[in-house]
Amino acid sequence: MNGTTRRTRPTGRRIRGLGMAVLAVLALVVGALVGGGTSSTPAVGERAADAVAAPRIVKASVSVTDTDDDDENGTPPSTTVPPVPPTVEPPTTVPPTTVPPTTVPPTTVPPTTVPPTTVPPTTVPPTTVPPTTVPPTTVPAVPGPRGIAGDCSVDVTAALADLITRAPAGATINLRSGGCYRIDSTLYLRGKRNLTIEGNGATLKAVAPGDQNRRHVWVIGGSGIVLRNLSIVGADPTPGSYDATKAFQHGVALSGVNTARLENLTIKNVYGDFVYLGASGGAWTRNVTVTGSTFSGAGRQGISIVAAQGVVIDRNAIEKVGRSMIDLEPNVSTDGTVDITISNNTTGTARNFWLANGGAGTNVRNVTVRGNTGVAPTGGLVWVYGPMSGYRGPFVFADNTFQFWGSVTDTGSKGGFFLSRVKGVAIQGNTVQFPAARKLPAVENRDALDVVVGINQFPGAGSALLVTTR
Figure (cartoon, helix red, strand yellow):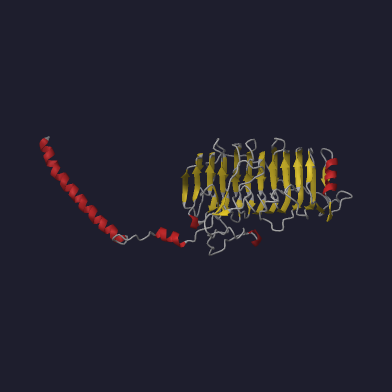
């Protein structure tokens, strides 16, 4: 054995010597290829990044205690990165009036059309969406209630409220076909059962600017409420811009209502949200369908769900929103959003996120976002920020087509799908146009569990996944 050792030692020294020579030659070759010497020539990727103008990032703040709050807590976004004017305007397929404020400029040109994905959502749990595609009921022309002016010449809020108060259970109130009813105060429906307001194409219109406490139509308690074939027009002269002094002037607010259907509505130019779903006396709103409606020009959120269970938002057109398109935000820990389906909607611009989920508590469960199409960008995409006390979820994001500028962030978020303190998320079959200059991660996991990312199309994304800490 000693003889063998003596034979192998010289060989080992020769091999190590040869290895050192080879490494030296390779070092010389690599040095020549990258510029040689000690010069720090930047890589191609670094030069490309330096040549791109930094986007303006708008940072929103989060509150979990304020009442009737939203994803920005009533504070206009603040700039965290000095703005650089974009070299080109973002394309849009909606009228120029839907372009977001110039204080949130895009830095890239997202395509106006994104090819739909052809990959079936194999990893997404099946969900059942209640049928919501029944065409609006056609009602013959009717003269409308007697003694109430239907030409918007005078304020008829009190007269309509009296008519509603006197209506028995199971009644249908028919407004005049094509009529215009001026409502400068809140039109209340309190504790009504099985009441239908058939608009017949009529309009409820606010002329006076009103104050923070006004809602255009406010349903409190009761059950079996139907609002159909009706337009609601607010008094906001600059639709889609946020005014904190009037931000609760919602088109339709439901508080503690058990079963309601909002069908074939047109709501526009309101200072607050198009639709707001909350609680009354601790009782959540339940079993609500919003379908076949057109919403344009909200000063705050598009649709806010604060305390509700069993909500379907299906086949609506929603655009020109001052803050987030869909806001799931419990105000207090006893609020929540449970069994929510957001499907087959067509959306335009929103200044903040397409879907924001902040607020208090962990009562956010079974949220499905499926088959929606964004025909214009939003500031951010999906932002879910649960509390440290537990986890929210599950969430499903499937077969959607989105585009966004990446110009809005919150809590330092970076990913298109930002997930913090959420458990059980499936992201499958989506096509999302990312702002290429930002190189954003498609998904950001900040203490989220059981996140499954299937086959998606994410052109412009910088990476598939970013893991961060809280």
